[in-house]
Image (cartoon, rainbow, N blue to C red; front, side, top):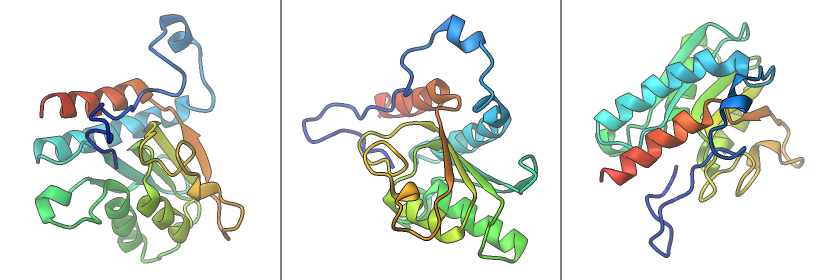
Amino acid sequence: MPTEQDREGEPADHSAPHGPPDPVRDLVPDPVRDPWRAAMRLALAEAGRAARGGDVPVGAVVLAPDGRTVLAAGHNEREATGDPTAHAEVLAIRRAAAETGEWRLAGCTLVVTLEPCTMCAGALVQSRVDRVVYGARDDKAGAAGSLWDVVRDRRLNHRPEVIEGVLADDCARLLTDFFRDR
């Protein structure tokens, strides 16, 4: 999860991988990211719940193999529960496994507002999700392509597909606003 500030006291960077908003670029269809926008909006709603509870606003949903049916959702609950592992991704994965009755979430997609940290990336590999879709990059603690790339490490037995940058500006703005208001 993002840190509020880096070691020098500068705010963490959660900017979109493709730069600032661009009205022309934003109007061009994106066949890779566009199919995940509706699910990301659900994850953003979950992130809002985290913020209202005083937690870092990260939200996640797990989609069934059809790519549309929501199996489970979660948002950060570390402050609410006192559990350091209560990250949005871990909670959504646990709930999806309970819903399906299987620990293997083969065919499923996890959609999350912020690039997963190393703990969550490990949980994603272990749960065998087919795909990870995230919004904002986390250059301070991300483990799905920015700082580390745990989910695509060739030494592991399972490597989900990664799609980054879905509604990245909206996801980053939610985090920036949260930390600015603290």
